[in-house]
Every structure is written in C-alpha cells, then in structure tokens.
Image (cartoon, rainbow, N blue to C red; front, side, top):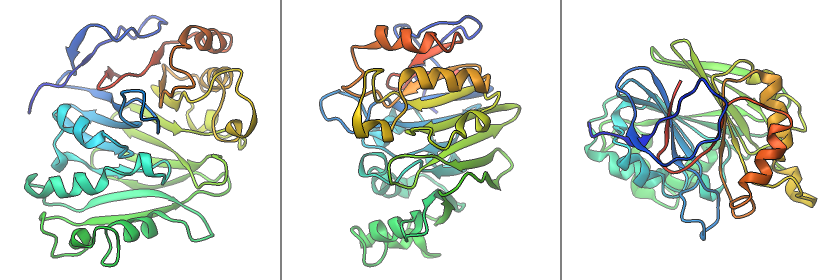
Length: 304
C-alpha cells in the first residue's frame, strides 16, 4: 500500500495545528485521517468534509463521501476492500456525491464481502435506503450501478443499507465487526435528519458530530472521554439568523469539548465563513476549552 503523506502532531501539548511538515501515518495503531476539510463552497480549494479511520494499515471506516473524497481516498493509499462500513451524518449532495464514483471505481478492488452503508432516517420517509435507491436503484440516477444492491454485483460484493432513526435522543448501537463498534445519536441540523457517529477501535474512540446546533444537548455526553471529537467549523462567533439552527458557534464547540473531556477537538468542514478567521475563532474556543485544537486540512492524519 502506498505511503499516506500527512501531518504529524505531538498530542501531549495543547496546540493549534499548523499543517506544515509532511510526514505519513504510522503502520500501527489507530489514526484519524481528514480526506476533505471543506464544505459545500466551490471557492475554497477543498474537498467536502469526509474522513477515514485507520487501524494499522487498513482503512476501516469512511465517514461521508463528500465531493472530492474519492480522489482523496486514492491519494491516501486506502484500499476499498478494507472498509468495514461507510456512514453518513446527513444526506445532502455535497457530503454524499462521490459514492457512485467509489462504487464504480471499486470494480477491481478485490473486495469480496458485504459493504454496510449506514445513515439517517426520519418518520417522514427520508432515509438512507430511499436515498440509495434513488441514486443507484433500478430506476435511480445511475441504474447500471443497481447490481451493487444484489447478489450479482459486478464488483464481487454487494452493499447493505441500514437506516438509523434520527429523531429523539436515543443512542443507537447495533453495529459491530471484529475490528470496530459503531454508535449514533440524532443531532439537530435544521429540519434535516442528521446523526453523530462514534467509532470504537481497540481502546480508542472518535466521535464525528458533523454539523449540529446542539439544541438536543446530547453531543457532550455522547462524546464523553473520546480521543477525538470531530465537528463542523462552519460559522463564526458573530453568526446570526437561520445558520445557527444548523451549526454551533466556536464557543459552543469549545464548551462541548470541555464537558465531554475529549483528548482533542478537530475542526473540519471549514467554510468561507470561517477561513481566515482562525485567530478570532480560536479565542472564542479557548475561552471554553484548553486542550489540543486542530484546524483540519486535506489529507492530514492524527494518531490516537
């Protein structure tokens, strides 16, 4: 497998990442890699927010398949056959759009086992299974990929879609493999079904909270003592109006990280609303949180 050229960080000291020195992930242990560090903007020269969790040399979990993530997945040296699951925080275009490319590109990956795909659903009929059917089902946008849903898949494997209800505050924890365990809780993102995910590998845990306004007030408990809390850094402290129904301000992110006692806070989904405002927003976060703080960039990797 090719080396994964990334950034290292000394985790023992509170810091803000500079993302300057090139290095690569280790061949052992658990690593969090940022495939895409942007949002839906097309002027930020970033892929949309998406992540991989490595266990040794194996990419075990992919979180969201945002625009540009297929390219970054390749650049990271990840092997599609190694994935235990793909999970979605939301079902918007910019954080799902590369799934068809990944599936079509996997034809020669050598994968031979079912690929679980998990994501949010709500009682109104919006669900990951319905989304996948509209995308690659027999009557979907890419019907020629529908064979990935059946036993006659051209790639030698099929995908298995599982809906996780994104209502209320109940914790869902009904998925595990020999390599990892997954849990999820609903989070508030306007009126869209949205989930935060927690993955546990060996004795390490990473929480991908995505974009949330924390109206449910459940993220801190869900992320309790996680090694990394990954959040969307989509708005500044001065944000007003409807956008605050979608995302948390920097000070709120810092408070949640402190309440959860996480080892480090990772700011992904960096948008044109926050790029260039790192110093100001760091100040707002530091009023609440003093631990390691990382402003995520493309293909960075962090050892847990």
